[in-house]
Image 1 (cartoon, rainbow, N blue to C red):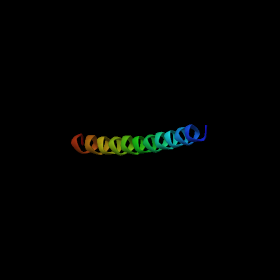
Image 2: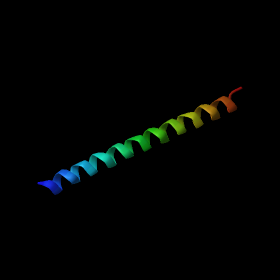
Image 3: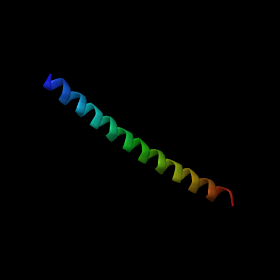
Image 4: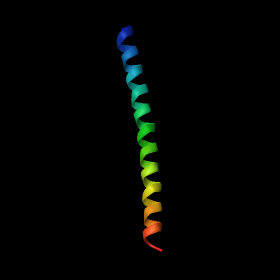
Length: 42
């Protein structure tokens, strides 16, 4: 019914939020690794 529909919508919203958070973390880690490797290897 209505409650299940709201719950699934909330779940998808949380999933998309986690997905964007993961993408941001991965890109930040990637930039940090690139910066570290460029510093350690002249």
